[in-house]
Picture 1 (cartoon, rainbow, N blue to C red):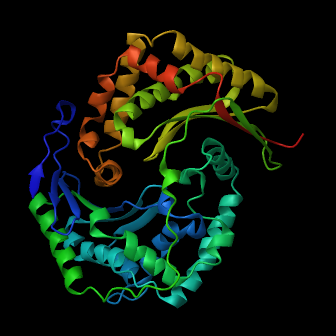
Picture 2: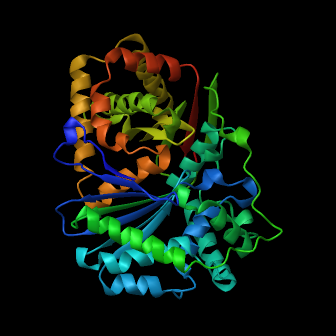
Picture 3: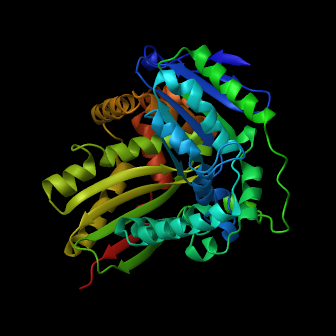
Length: 439
């Protein structure tokens, strides 16, 4: 089944993706754009949130092992084929998905794309390579622990969530990584790297029919050369506790964490509220807009007040962090220790203002224009657009939100923003993390 989505009015001249569902469950998306490159992005609906505590870090570890060869491609052969054509490849693992991609010249796409499909779907995960890569993963964990920003984020996630899997690090803890086995990973790959969980997106300067044909031929070739099913070991991945996927209730009081970090010159402040996630997609637009009102651009309320006018912070930012089951409304600032109480109180006052008075129409219009333009500017390259399509298809199984995001923002009115703030952003109940230098 193949169809072309009707673009929204705002994207009539920009977006025209075609989507096709293969009988085996794989979703294909293709679009021709007049840029002399082609990006292939493969999205798997599995990340660290699918893991149990006993195998925390497996999805990220597997991302590394995918590049260690298959029965048809020796370890290092994929990278050699990519580099000799001047193409690039990389991957990333998050809480909700794993993403692999290559960017090639149009004339090389038909040759290189099948290799990308091959390494992802037919990863061999040999024992010796698994053991060698373990030290790489452990070093990556150590480096993340050396980063104040990563330490702050990790503490914030543990404060924001009491039980949901998002509170765990994507990399996993060293003590878990040290005891994982190659057979556990082969089982994990077989369990999660299934066609029904995969979206393949090709965007670039080739006709849609040619892009689709390359992908379909590649998947058919892989199926015809697929190895025998992996033998299940007696050590299977422990099932995820489904109760951990139920969204957590809003904070009922101020939950405070303070960390002393001798490597810092300035303090860090993070304030958190639990908000709806991607499974409640329409509600996420409201919090995207509230985040922009408070923190996007030099004229945003917190930026103007705390940085530009009162000079209480060296930086301040606001994000609506949207994971699948639940999100976090995340305000962060870098500042001198003596301003911590003043800045926290000021942020609470700005949250209270969102309760007390609707955002002015003129401010809302300015924010809509700013966010819409940044959205458009950020999705012009083939890799950007492929990521946009793959992200929405992988997280909500729907491509339409990738096309109508600006229209959704424009449809919001001040009363909706005020009601959402009153419902989810309490001035009296939130999580707060302070990371400060030694006295």
